[in-house]
Image 1 (cartoon, helix red, strand yellow):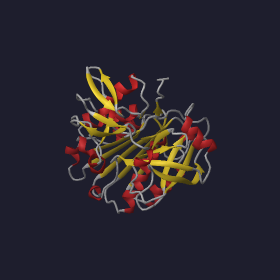
Image 2 (cartoon, helix red, strand yellow; image 1 turned 135 degrees about the vertical axis):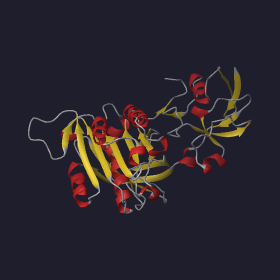
Image 3 (tube, one colour; image 1 turned 60 degrees about the horizontal axis):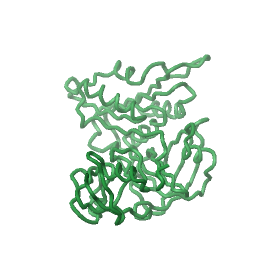
Image 4 (cartoon, one colour; image 1 turned 45 degrees about the vertical axis):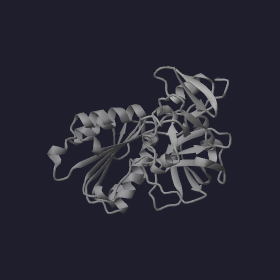
Length: 339
């Protein structure tokens, strides 16, 4: 058993527990979500003792220099001292600048931060509502805009997504944190073959990555596969068809689980987007040395994990696989009574 201190209160951690585990077990209030160090929701500040190995993994140099650590990644050392942080230390104010419905279940939200925020398509931010409820959403637009574009699907029993879809209005105040992640396009990729696979609103970031690549004069081929349940879920289908017609190096194909009873749309077929992509491409850079490929995956964690494994086992190096997964649950704040 290890004793550490949180907000000057003594906490006993059991063997193998992280700081987050111990705090939750003992009823302390702390925001958290992914438990993997990705969302940065459970940040706390180090004030004394040795910083454990791995506690700052994935943090920016600025966060490290300010002594922040991820509670979910920190295995406490004896007499480690930590404190909770004020929301305003890591969040900035913002408001909803524009709201547009893209389908019966997807809404586009344009968020305007109160100060300049450097961002890229394929990163993500945390949005915080007036009552403290917080949710992670992926960015779908390039760095040239001061606005941050998000594609949000209304989820069954999703408190935040339902509020954004049905109730939040233009001008609504929010807090934002981030951006985080590096599933983004870079100029050094300009001659690579890009293969992008997204499901659901995972289309948003890959669509943004493609627009970013094209605006930078990408020379290699670009292939986009959008996976959806049915044709009604292909909320950007016409825009993607238009983009393909405008750029000879881009190919787009939609993959749905089931077709409608009527006439199907152009460039739509049934099938799993991975299986379809693998039928068209050899995921082996040794056979494509003249035009090495780079794979981008965006969607649910199970989808992304499956894709990373398949692509890697078929010969694509890990440094050429870029992934952004998102959770469907709202970030939680555990009350002090543990309920």
